[in-house]
Amino acid sequence: MTQADGLPLPSTWRPLRLQTLVLLRWLAVGGQTIGVLFVAFGLGFPLPLLQCFALIALSAGVNLWLVLRLGNSHRPTSRSAASQVAFDLCQLGGLLALTGGLQNPFSLLLLAPVSVSATTLPQRATIFIALLAAVIASALSVWHLPLPWDPVERIVFNRIYVIGIWVSIICGVVFISAYTMRVAHDARQIADALAATELALSRRERLSALDGLAAAAAHELGTPLSTIALAAKEMRAEVQPGSDLAEDVELIIAQSARCRAILAKLRNLGSDGGDPFAAVPLTDLLAEVARPHEGHGKAILFYSEKSAGPPPVFQRGVGLLYGLGNLIENASDFARSTVRVESAWDLEAISVTITDDGPGFAPELIARLGEPYLTSRPRDPHGPDANKPGGLGLGVFIAKTLLERTGARLAFENIGPEGHARVRIVWPRDAVEVGEGTVKLRGRKNTPT
Image (cartoon, rainbow, N blue to C red; front, side):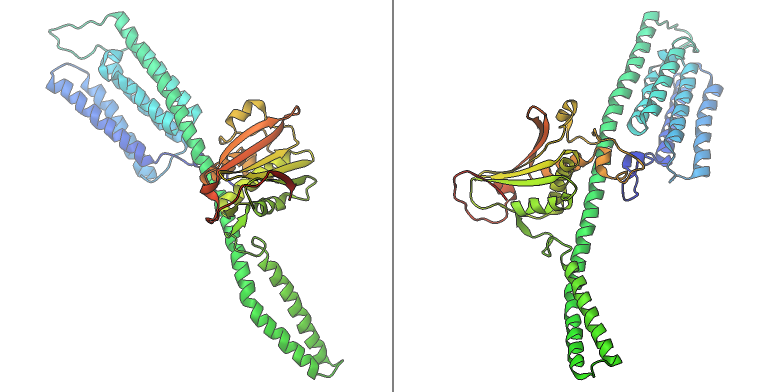
């Protein structure tokens, strides 16, 4: 899954550096070495030193081989990272089998690889690691060497106690894998969606910057072009009609007129030729964001409910324009024939309501609208909208996020017997209105704008 700009989403990046896995493995090697030496020489308990150090050396050898072959900066694929975590789990299981199995208090460390996998690896890899941990724990409950202990004092564990340890480890594996994986999944979704939002805003800002540059270029070129046209007209009055020079002069005048027409279009690339971030009345702002979606076989009707003076003035911003435009675009896409955009304001609040005459929101999705990757729109990966954020279930999330940053509250609902979709956006008036003018309360009146 990639964005329209060709950049991968965060969840498709390789989340772990090899250096991180290597460092964790070196910590395990160091801890295992200290533990084995302390039990053997500090406590004087007998244990199979050769076999234990063989497993520890194997882990250290894998670390050295990976670093020399790939380098610390390498980012392994999800499959490669899962293979390394599985190796660490098997190595730990082998060490525990040599030192008492589940009776060894360090058997709790079987949960560590599961936690690493659930936090950073895909769901399928985490399920595999969790199942492997459960299989290893089950095997250790049956097959293992005796727990290293004082030869003079015999220690015996009740079978029920060992079963209890096994059950606790299995429960820990299930809980940690499910809980951590779910939390990490939500975090990755939010990261993906915010990345898509930033890309969409970046694209809109680049377009706005191009509009401004075009208008500036048109302004700077206007003066010399006028001078050229004036000089050409003066030459036309002095040359012999019908001569070759007269034809060249007429050509210059015609082309300069054509250049003026092109420059006029460049001046209007922005928001009707004005500052793309200037203040604008709400009714004009709504007409502006809806204009690109008109003329596609759907009527967009505007209504204003004036109860507190003239329309409030908003500061035109990329987030506001994109958020409102996205909601109107969605309504236009799903409408059968008509989209109603209603605005209202009083002394306390400003509201915009967008209603379409389409089939409405899916009832099971209304409560979750605004979450990333939630869509009922079929997406054709080979169609013209293959890279469109809305096709990924991000359109409403982006719009909701951007509008909430301006202080708005959004509500989604289905209305009427046919369940048409309605989105209501409400701002506190003092949070978004530009200027400090006072308004007088007037009678309520519905008028189409």
